[in-house]
Amino acid sequence: MIGSGNIGTDLMIKILRLSDTLEMAAMAGIDPDSDGLARARRFKVPTTHEGVDGLIGMDGFADIGIVFDATSAKAHLVNAARLAPHGKTLIDLTPAAIGPFVVPPVNLGRHLDAGDVNMVTCGGQATIPVVHAVSRITPVAYAEVVASLSSRSAGPGTRASIDEFTETTARAIEQVGGAGRGKAIIILNPAEPPLIMRDTVLCLIGDADHDAVRASVTEMVAEYVPGYRLKQEVQFTPIAPDEPVRTLLPADAAPVTTKVSVFLEVEGAAHYLPAYAGNLDIMTSAALRVAERIAHHEREKATP
Image (tube, rainbow, N blue to C red):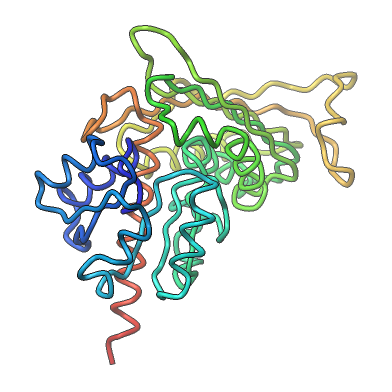
């Protein structure tokens, strides 16, 4: 684990408590006094405060197969370059997006042999499954997502990557979600007491079977991570002929007639941070699922 902040610490605790596939080999940070490194030491996990170089120099580094990067987009570029000669599989929890996007309920099995997989963003993990659920029923010409999360749950790494967050999420809405064009907006909500993560997904579609779309979204939400739920029924709003939506659509998009609105809430499991930090929990839960699947895949390849 590279990164001893909120995301790295929560993921470490999930691995220690929940996984019968993965073993925590080390945690690397850059702040010797960070809470994450202190907790790792209490859990008897080897630590270093010298970042990726300290990790490479640790005893047992050669036996590590998977490295999670829970730092920032800019830091991941450096970390990936330093780790490249060592043949590790990287799971990137920053918006750097060097490798392919992975959203577990959509494309978990497609990139198991990639050397560096990207978990998009917390907003992407929360909303792209819904865009995909709509697009597997009917073409989505445009999808817009708004992720609202407590400002308390946004640490330095998240704040340093806000620009990359919107750009990476928008690209993944198109590439993984299947939308013709995507847009992402993030809101850091300063409300006290803190509110749990809320997400709004808007999709512009043509004529389609509304019951089939509703069923697809409901099924997707039900099969994802705990604490991920619909706030209300999926809504369908007719688009008036004179409504100026053409500027949102790709040049070759078919006419759209309906706006689909999906309202989500993401409550965290509170393994490390409070339940309102569902934005972190959905990232770490998804990353754990991806790492376990990659580990199983590697064992299958090694079995004669």
